[in-house]
Length: 253
Ligand code: NAD
Ligand code: ZN
View (cartoon, rainbow, N blue to C red):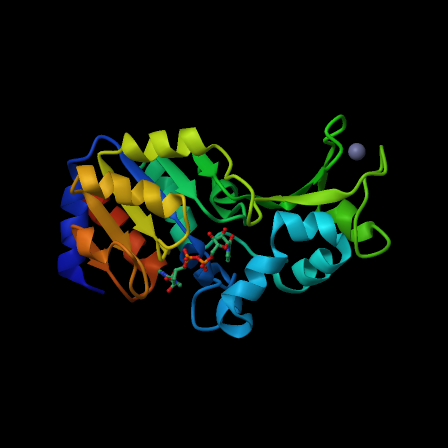
């Protein structure tokens, strides 16, 4: 572990009244959910274009069967529990060291770890919503898995169900709230994101143009490494966060 970088992060966080965390798929790999852009990710295996062409709202509307076949094969996550990194962030929120999280993840692991102020801009994978605007009934995994056939339908009105995740071609959820939370931060801590997916990457870029206090913990390069006050690359992210939190406990911050 890079002790010097950890010390630097501790002193930056200690002086912050409003630390906001931005997380991407990399925070959940240690909890057993693969990312897309990492070495074994599906973007490497299948190519980004193929994924974008299917995990797309137009493809969903045109060919729900084709969509669901692909989606069920590649997008349904293995059962998992929050990892150490999720748990530490939840503890840091309780201690007032973190004020909120904006996440691109759809795995609900922050919420399940006990974090309360979470904006999940890409939605939630274990929820499905009826496409009929007059109905909008919400279902969980259990119902969808019990449906016959590959495409799940609403029990109430018979319309098709869509995973409550943001597909390519759709707007993110809580755009204004997410941007406000990030732009209002004093310190922004980015964890496990390559900062290539917009608009979130754009919010972080905008933040870094006005303020200096950007910290990045990510394996591999990100689009904003040059703008970071501290970059921690490598090691076990859960352990790194645990050490940061422990140092803050010890020093009474
Ligand atoms: P991304 O672009 O944010 O990349 C993830 C980054 O995390 C990569 O740079 C990778 O090297 C890094 N990383 C991997 N393991 C790490 C670790 N242990 N510690 C620190 N960094 C680590 O995300 P993506 O994989 O390109 O996914 C794109 C989108 O797909 C996401 O925004 C999300 O909506 C969705 N997605 C969600 C999940 C999830 O909910 N867990 C998983 C995969 C993809
Ligand atoms: Zn319905």
